[in-house]
Image (cartoon, rainbow, N blue to C red; front, side, top):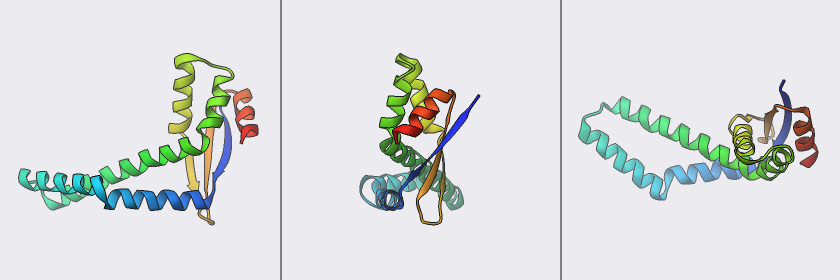
Length: 132
């Protein structure tokens, strides 16, 4: 059985996230790593189209991982409290990770993001819903 609970990441936090992602991808160490990667691919003789696809895939993976960080930042305390109320040890850690990694977010018209979490128990779903 699975029970879903939807929560909102406010538009202001969503905007901050997108600004942070753009800054990370276009500045500092990530930019240097990108330039080094492109140079290495050039030296290896990879076609430009393949290079572009590799960089695009890398950017998608980075954005996804950074998004998981935002979900964790906004909801981790409530998720941990919820899960730790009924589980412990590695079972609790695994469930906390599963809830964060499997959360589905859909951007709303006002630029907020509706995030859906899927719980395996009604008790945990209710506790999480009440905690935020």
